[in-house]
Length: 173
Image (cartoon, rainbow, N blue to C red):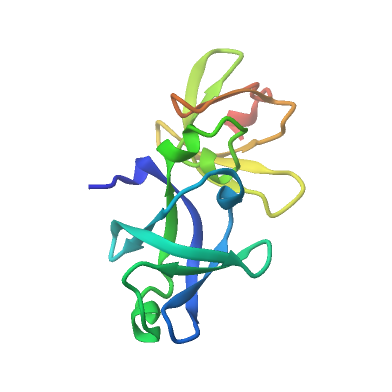
């Protein structure tokens, strides 16, 4: 069984495209540019299910047309509309390059100055020029931490940890 901590969200499926089972996908991560894979994970009724891709092609930087194995009709593709799309962390971790913002969701955030665990990154808000980590602390609070490259000291992909020089007083806000 695939667990949520073993994957990270890369997009969402939209409507079918044509009548041969292709489906539109809004992609929020550039994983296709970085890692070869023949499988994506879809969340169907709360269960993570692997789907093998026969092919995919880009319509724009964020829009991809995907043809999954054994999905051969518009009706079958329509059943997948709205499914969240995930990618296996293990495959992304093997990639030598830097982690993307989407990959960091689920990572532990560590205060690099004190070497203490702050919490778990639940979301990355990159809708503005000032990117923020939304972090759930051990006591259940939600805090926002700047995700500035100047503050990030280390990204440990193997242990799923990111070390950040926390701005003074940020956790008291």
